[in-house]
Amino acid sequence: MLSLPVFIIASLIKIVLVIFVLLTAVAYTVWLERKVVGHMQNRWGPSRVGPFGLLQPLADGIKFLVKEDLTPPHVYRPLFIAAPMIAVVCALTSIAVIPFGTAITVFGYSIPMQITDIHIGLLVILGITSVGVYGVALAGWSSNSKYSLLGGLRASAQMVSYEICLGLSLVGVLIVSGSFSLREIVESQSGHFWGFIPKWNIFYGGQFVAFFIYLMAAYAETNRIPFDLPEAETELVAGYHTEYSAMKFAMFFMAEYANMITVASLATLLFLGGWSGPLFGPPLLQAILPTFWFVAKVFVFLFIYIWVRGTLPRFRYDQLMAFGWKFLFPLAIANLVVTALVVALFGTSRG
Amino acid sequence: MLHLVLFLVFGAICVAGAVNLLVQKHPIGSALSLVVVMASLAVEYLLLGAEFVAAVQVIVYAGAVMVLFVFVIMLLNAGEEELTKGSRVAVVLGVPGVLAGGLLVAWVLLRHSGEHTVSLGALPGYPKVIGQLLFHEFLLPFEVTSILVLIAILGAVFLASKPEATPRPTGKEN
Image (cartoon, rainbow over the protein chains, first blue to last red):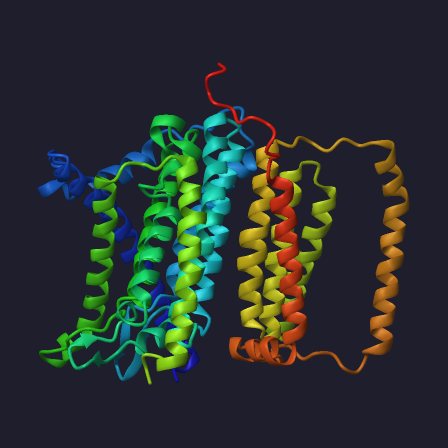
């Protein structure tokens, strides 16, 4: 165990580092999305600011900061100001329990690559994201405009509906791993089936179905195409953030992309074996490699997000609800039953 | 010591939220104060060591039930509360009534559980323990409760289903 001063200093360094990396990742996910979608649509995407438009996020940030922060006269001010804060705080907080790799040794202290390891880590993430709905819902209501209100209503109904499927898809993984701690879930996935297939949860006991359900539900939870009804431009102007400008608007944007990163990290940890991957080379490389594998898997997941955005059209609202309740929900329950049977008959992937 | 300070702080927030719930004129304000009450209750569970219960409290009550409350308030576009004669009578009779009830409860609690205060962080709230309690010792109450919930769901489906006789709008009328 670490002594208290060392623990506090290590935690502070980790917090600053993780927030810095997360915010940079958020900014560059926006850049990546614009670039990739641009190429998919036979355009260049951002290309003027810096090489390959790499400084575009910086330019965007400066623009958001120096723009006039308009507050329309008809809004309910306290909630109008609080809503983007709730959204962004909830989105950024949930990264605190996500482990990025095994422990590294610095100056003789073994420091885990995670801000805090609590044994109900998964539940903490679910709790924080479920509170994040208020940001969107209250933004829609407090703006006092019909488009915002419709966006907020759609968002809250959609997120509550898909949260059930999301939760159920994770229960299968929990049965297989037998723990709520994200670190233990990842450690239960180390090793290989028959010597060559990695023991990731996605390859065990029908969890591929759970992964599919998780993917769909996660797209709906983060309000992404094909489920971006709350901000459908063609019908609702911009949905819940229609009345927002400058940094408040940017906060919603940051919340959306930070949520994407959290969801991608969670998928990596629960289904794709977290930081497990081949280790080789000198000790320094071996210390960095787990985190590299983790980031690589998250990146693949984010790329699929963007790929889907560039490919699929938007659902109609009743189709969205029917898909969630009449297809995903029964499928999630069936998967749960099958997983329980498999584990009861053949044991968990560990034993 | 830190536990006690945290307990008092979040207890105060909880009570303040509950009072604010009654004082607020607009239903959204009331609903949000209820969220505050739920969240601070979750912190109190956490202080007792019941981490799982605290997390479930946030996920279910603050995250799902109250979101639906807010959703319904937004959907119905409920306005400010209107004071009627009945509500004035309720204020006159209710406030002393609540005070008397609170004093009674406090007196009974002090009288009968003076020596046995629960020490903070004493209850092991691991998910495994709770699962064993639910599915071994309290299996029958648990299953009976789930049937109760099922009946509620059936009732909601029945109330929400439209009678067959009304023709569905075809979109050609306009």
